[in-house]
Image (cartoon, rainbow, N blue to C red; front, side, top):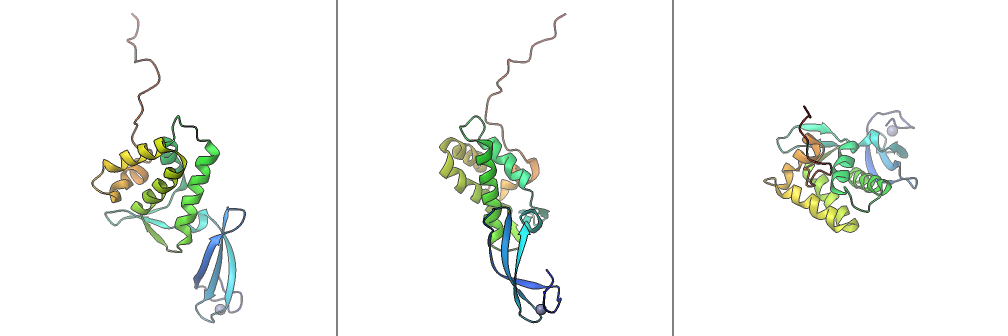
Length: 166
Ligand SMILES: [Zn+2]
């Protein structure tokens, strides 16, 4: 973000909060050269932090992965697609608002659990049970950042696969 006064390219974030519309983050910044303070509005996607996996590798934060994990947890529950989107956005924003450029993958799982606990007990329990399968919360990356979908706790709905008729 270029300083509007001296055009210096680096600034520090002083304050960060979602804009009323929810699609943007409003940031107060201070220019590192002249200390001039200015406000920027940044789209959520543009400012998403890097996810730090337990092995130390970094990967771009991907909201779609959060949505997928949520959809899996909320499958067949009375939770609308809009609500799932909202939770995903909220979690994204919460992470964003810390203003840090990197976020441990475990924090994302913690946030999701917290939000699910407010919404639906079953979805929460499902998510928590997937969580527990891993050695530690940090291994949650397996759900969110490597498989991207989460464990399938439901029995398949369809009829059992039938042999081909001969
Ligand atoms: Zn400046």
